[in-house]
Amino acid sequence: MKVTAITPLVLGTAWRELVFLRVDTDDGISGYGEVRPLNKTKAVLGYLEEAAPRYLIGRDPFNTELLVHEMMNGDFGRPGEIAMSALALMEIACWDILGKDRGRPVH
Image (cartoon, helix red, strand yellow):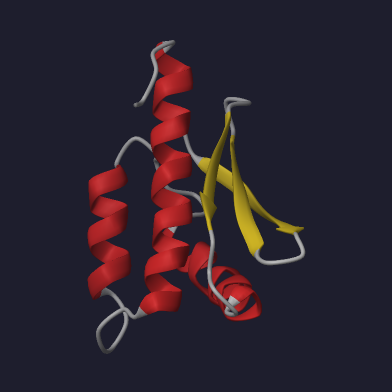
């Protein structure tokens, strides 16, 4: 199984914005992740646009720990709030894909 696409979705409310990420695979399974970046929504979306082709597209979502390791160490410098929010979106979505594939909850 390989990741084929990501789709960020923003749900705005009067007091916050939630960012959801749909991660699609070539097997037809989609996983979802969610974060609430306080006043940094556009920055997280921009980071996702740049990071997803490097770290996620074409990769095996079942290899979640390797993906997380590469995202945390692959760029120069320490990942801050924005990179870690994007990483959380992708990691949660990968775990969701794994659970759906196995027919088991991921909680």
